[in-house]
Image 1 (tube, rainbow, N blue to C red):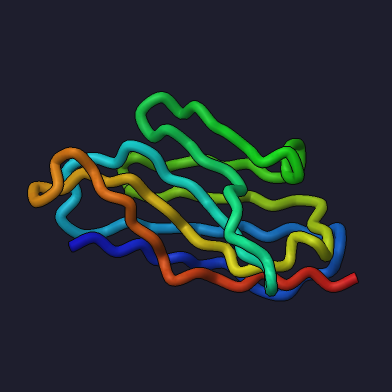
Image 2 (cartoon, rainbow, N blue to C red; image 1 turned 180 degrees about the vertical axis):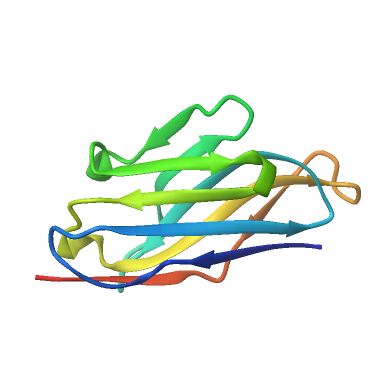
Length: 122
């Protein structure tokens, strides 16, 4: 069983910063990729940023390029999302995602955290 636990959400004024963390735990053999998605009220869940754990290669949504940075600590099975110059339109529930290999699923399965709310006030 694998768990992803997010932390770091909260209320911030526009122009401010927040740092989200997501720690993966459980019977993990390897983590392929980890990422952050978000879902605003009335909207579909969208990819914010992702990182290939082994190489460190990253991918960002156009709306956050230059403002958000995803990083990982492989030893801790943790991924971070540094969010700067936050805008009201960044308000959403942010979900951690990981494609993770376990002894039960050696090919890798998609896991989700429960989400953390980020609210940016204008």
